[in-house]
Amino acid sequence: MPDVIPENSVGIVTPQAIHFDEPLVLACGRTLDNYTLMVETYGELNADGSNAILICHALSGHHHAAGYHSMADQRPGWWDNHIGPGKPFDTNRFFIVCPNNIGGCHGSTGPISINPDTDQPWGPDFPPLRVRDWVESQARLADKLGIRQWAAIVGGSLGGMQVMRWALEYPDRVRHAVVIASAMKLSAQNIAFNEIARNAIRSDPEFCNGRYLEQQTQPRNGLGLARMIGHVTYLSDELMGNKFGRELRSGSFQRGQDAPIEFQVESYLRHQGDAFSGTFDANTYLLMTKALDYFDLAREYDHNPVEAFRHASCNFLVVSFSSDWRFSPERAAEIVEALIAADKNVAYTAIESNLGHDAFLLPNQRYEQVLTAYINRIAAEISSK
Amino acid sequence: MMIRTDLNIIQQWIHPTSRILDLGCGDGELLQTLAKTKGVWGYGLEIDADKITSCVARGVNVIEADLDEGLSQFSDNSFDTVVMTQALQAMRYPHLVLGEMLRVGKQCVVTFPNFGNWRARSYLLSRGRMPVTRQLTFQWYDTPNIHFCTVKDFEALCTEKRIRILHREFVAERLPDRYMKGIWPNMFSDTAIYHLSK
Image (cartoon, rainbow over all chains, first blue to last red; front, side, top):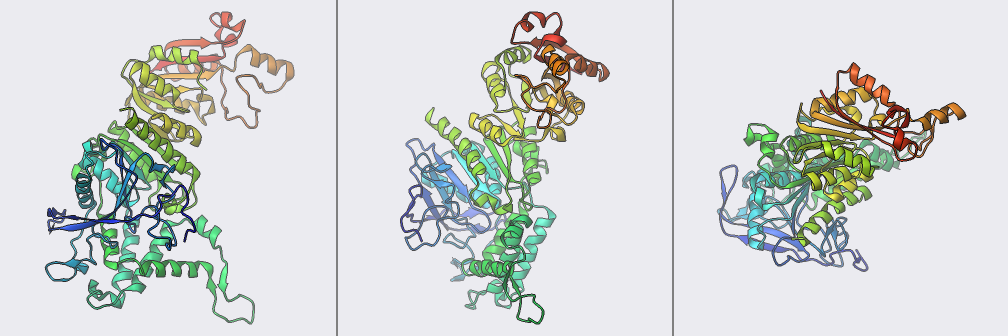
């Protein structure tokens, strides 16, 4: 809880629920007749609507990217390091928009919403989503907010996939694409980790084939376990070594002692799982991980990423982190290679970090310098127009 | 650091609106200048974190890359000109890098400090120690410049690899080098600038 709101914070923010009545035809062929997006915005849209930045969230993210909802909040939004007055995404200069995606569980229409056809929560009946469905719903959000073209679209991980899809689907609606710790498609290993996580959820007896809300229960163990698996893969071996090593939380290896032994890392992971399973929805987790698995940037372009990127007309900044093994620098290099072969403007850097995939969410001086340098260029373009 | 004279010499060999790859592009000055004066378009490769940030700040297309790992991400003849200024001597295998440059580019421009300059020669001769000069400021043990060569060495390599030398220019800042470099480049030039093709 902040005693005082820091000066470089966007302060107390209030999300708004924006309703859409025009039916959304999804990639799976089904239609959402109407839907709600929970959205936070920071800063002011300028007169010609040229200073808007869209932030696309990742697997477990949501609309609350910066600031506090109340003075009682324990922590600020998930990207508060980067969004605020004087921060890389400077709210003095930009109008920043962050929606919770459909299928999410933080206020936008998703599995925990009521299905109007049954008056019961959607649960497992919520339509499966693809990254392009999110892009489509975000484009409609842009229309509603009076944003014809985004100055930049930014996202890490699954968010980066939305950024790339935007660049291909709406080339004239985005000037800069910032793709962080992302990939054009997941590897088999990545899909495997996601499937283990999904299996953990499904095998929880409380999961009830996804109808746990109707049964007034929650598959908390399964969801917690899914999060534990995910969390380990978002960290690096080195980081876990530094943070926990083989430290014990309880018990000892002394001879003659048989009290139960618990490593620090075990208790940490359990805490992560518990905290997550109390605030996230299991069906959303299944839906999001599947969208991640299904994404393949070049599928519709004859599996040729160069051909895919030929459809883009924005400039790109691509960032990876050295110890990220789920979205490794090699995956980022593939994006960059395709962009170069497609003659696109691109800058690429691999940030030295031992924080694994989670590095994209965490403070890092070099990361902030690169983002700031890039965003300053965008600000200069806007003011020179 | 790019010296104005080098830049002016390089510019005359760059065709307007051509596609350029700058290896070891530093803070992006060359690419930015060529974009302004010649309307060229291209990419710079750089390994130094702060220099990459400077390129991003300038709006230069910079790609973080280790040149010693080759240029496998680029296809044959995909650039009109591949430029490398003052970096050849820091490569693990300069001859392989040169080969890669000529594969990826139709033409190449290479600049390097001439170790055959009389100041370096006399330093070694008189003091018996590895030259530390205005241009070559590192000690032998911490220098990134691990493969120094002379103008003669470089031309010998070009002959051996059947590389065509389209143009050669020599730069010297001080006297008497400025007057003498035309007569005896290997003895008097500080910097050699070569325009090459296959």
